[in-house]
Amino acid sequence: MADLSCSFLGIESPNPFWLASAPPTDKALNVYRAFEAGWGGAVWKTLGEDPPPVNVCSRYSAHKSSSGEVIGINNVELITDRPLSVNLSEIRQTKKDWPDRALIVSLMVPCEKKSWQDILKQVEDTGCDGVELNFGCPHGMPERGMGAAVGQVPEYIEMVTQWCKESTDLPVIVKLTPNITNITLSASAAKRAGADAVSLINTINSITGIDLDSMTALGAVGDKYTSGGYCGSAVKPIALNMVGQIGRHPETAGIPVSGIGGISNWHDAAEFIALGAGNVQVCTAAMLNGFKVISDLTDGLSQWMDSKGYKALNDFRGRALAGLTDWKYLDLNYKTVAHINQELCIQCGRCFAACEDTEHQAISVKPLSGEGWERRFEVQKEQCVGCNLCQITCPVNNCISMVRGNEGSEYLPWVRHPANPLTEKP
Image 1 (spheres, one colour):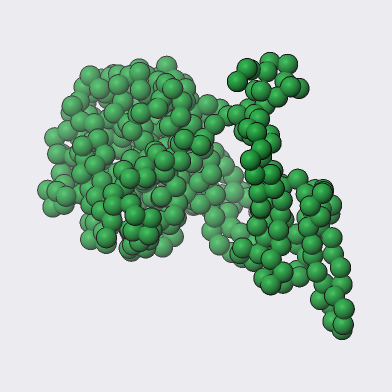
Image 2 (tube, rainbow, N blue to C red; image 1 turned 30 degrees about the vertical axis):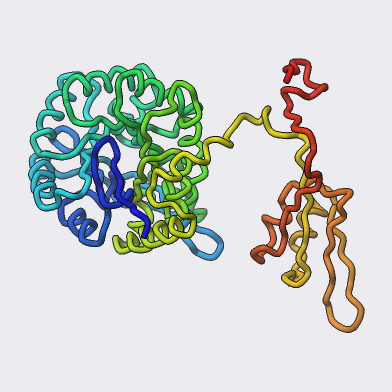
């Protein structure tokens, strides 16, 4: 069996799956249950100064697919609403009872050096393995000068991270907000300040929907609502991109990354690790399925690693970064053409409708001889531009494939194209 043990910043855990700082890690009862189920670590729900904030209800709303599957959750819950002393006591006892699990404490206090120094000293005394600076919360806390109000300003990230590095010997992880235009600016600021790692992404500003009868949002508090933090499988593509950009950028490459955002199964986790993440943090999948989902995560990842011959996580960590580049370096001579497997085709016509109405009219339809409604869809290779839309719309796995059409063609990126006024020489 593949070895799933994980060492992140020298913090050991039996597997790379940590619970993210969120409602599932708000108290010892939850964290104990998670560790009993097999989770490798947990990031305790964000602590702040006393008195703790007051939360509202409702707190969650969902974005669902047409079949009713939850693909995203919006939440307006704040940091822990329990007294700091209670949390610290439970963290101390949890680490004593579960010494082999990673236990990180998320923190958020006012943007004042003494506030950070004071809480770090108290957290250090619990024996936890590290701290995560919450610079990402997009609702409620930014209105108080915290959370994303810090994370959206690189200078603030650098300043607060420096305060923390000066004030503690614990590993410092900086949690980044995705509610910006360039994640590498934030990650660079954290790295300059000496952060031991970054974690990302935190939740994305969102409104999941409007109730057209009450004219308020889903999950409203009375007749008022606000934008909240969006998480779940729908945010994974955004998170993967940001993790990848940090991994390839010259100013941020090499900084350890804890990957967060829409990780719902082992495959998602493997994708984050392939883009360089040292471990992954999970929240929504646990909230929707319970802590026992960890068995599916660990079993699936282990079996896949076995099938590929990977004995340890580092065997494939970062392997997908080599191919990540700018658009201008993509091969303009690389051509593919769609191919329809007629034995698998169910003649639904979705590929035809999509291509005929919105793309390049590259699929023809012909009725088959005999009785009935059967028909045959065929790709017109001369018109096909290899856009993949037919493959995306097809409801049958592997029915439509993209076949390379010009093997051996010369590599020609835009930077070398004759039509580019800034053409670079080979």
